[in-house]
Image 1 (cartoon, one colour):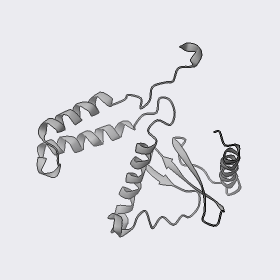
Image 2 (tube, one colour):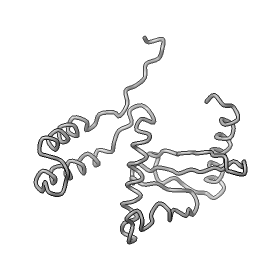
Image 3 (spheres, one colour):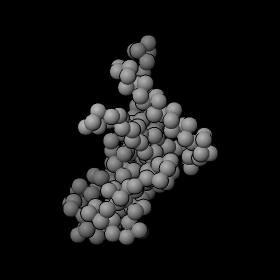
Length: 163
């Protein structure tokens, strides 16, 4: 990070969250997670911290404290019942994946997600009226998913000395 002030603010924010975990004796439900930190400057020139955790095992977002996520799970976004909340959080999880597909070396999409996706694609081939793709596009998608299963999302970076 090139901006030293921003670097120090991010480190202070991270240390605050770590302190919250220790002080409140919280535990992260899995070791398979990402932490997303964001720092913005408000209209009145105050620094605002925001964050979320991404649990890859449960495929959802979570926070350390009670969080008002009503704007993320509103009826306007299709969330009309409590049963929809899990689906919305999973959609936000996959949105995180699309924004940050390669966080570290050898990161993989969970294997059960491939099986789930394959089931959706195969169902789409049988009941083609539910998806907006023709048969050739569906076959290509199936081949891509079959080829990608178990493949790392990113390639290990080589050190300059190895080039």
